[in-house]
Length: 346
Image 1 (cartoon, rainbow, N blue to C red):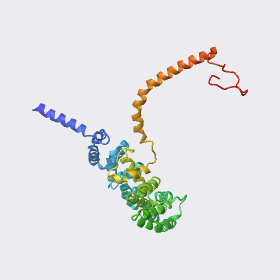
Image 2 (cartoon, one colour):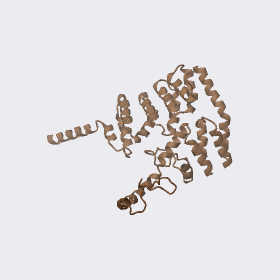
Image 3 (spheres, rainbow, N blue to C red):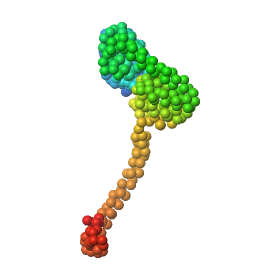
Image 4 (cartoon, rainbow, N blue to C red):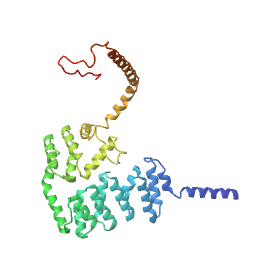
């Protein structure tokens, strides 16, 4: 009986030691393992409240791609320290998805570290739709450094201009672009000619902002292939967050990025010409051709070596004959026009 009790206690101690650090076991799984996100989430739930931020830091430090979903959920975490870590981590990972931008933007209205992190995120990703929230924040908290830095970056201003000045700038920018953007939004759903007019309007606005990027994204779904190609070519250089997320999604679906982002629509067959036209470089598709040609080159290398040897032997014999005068006139004999003849031997 005592032996059995000791065995049970020993087994309990072993299992307890194994479960002492569940996150370590989760991080030991390969990146992309189907069970890894659930294991990391369980480790986060088991962590004491005072240790949850440390657990989040370890997940972020691992650099795992499959931790994206956990970070996205932590944006609205009750623990401010965890929320700030998640927001800053997603800013470093950008571009990810527009779901992050739309979830973080309302946090600008919060006081404390979470609101400051949301301001930094808006500045990092270029979220021009956060301008109103940033102006409201700096009007409510005059001199807020994070809100003012974000406004300076988004509006391309070298210095601040006070709460009233920021509000006036934001309102002026919205008024200047409202008419053109409203017209483009109406035209893009029309004929190919109307859609091209909408794209022309957006191309003439620098920057067109997030509303302009959404017009271009709608144009990539147009039935006309020329419209799709033109919209895609402008999206490749657009600075708006929606365009950056579109490029990241496109690259992931085409196999040029590490892993596809969750929750994005795969490209339809009708989008293939648009994607081909929007591709910035043709170096990647050429790789399979090079790989396919490698065996042929290796087979012909022996023939190249033999031909080189034969050519060298023939050249040596010809030079020997030239020195003896068998091959005809001497090498340095003057030409008929009085000029020295330049030959391969010279």
